[in-house]
Length: 137
Image (cartoon, rainbow, N blue to C red; front, top):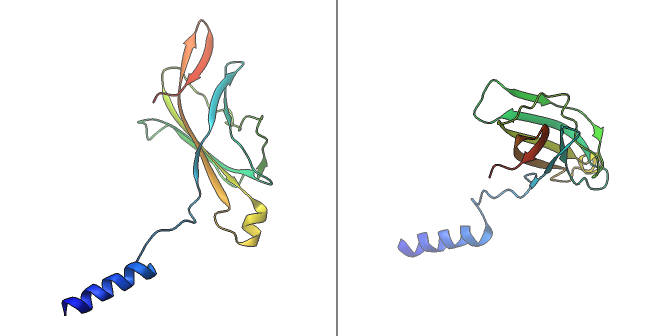
């Protein structure tokens, strides 16, 4: 009996049965943060035909101050700020900014993953009248 259980367990381990690892999850990458003319600028590194599919902004620790835009299909370049849609950022508050890039060609082909998440957490500080964004961690 013990031998049968051991062989069964070994068989499941070798074949991967029961293993719940899913490598099709979109990767989570770090976006860059800076300020340009006192405006927040989030930068990502799009590949091939990737477009901005969604933007999500939240104030850390606040359920009330959240913003999201989906189904954007907006073109993006690596030297271009991701749109924040006029979100009002304030100094001294920690923000989390997430944007999803999607590849229409990968999505059409059924390739997984066809999306990538870019995230950055930052805090704005007023430095002699000029806003500066820094990462809080």
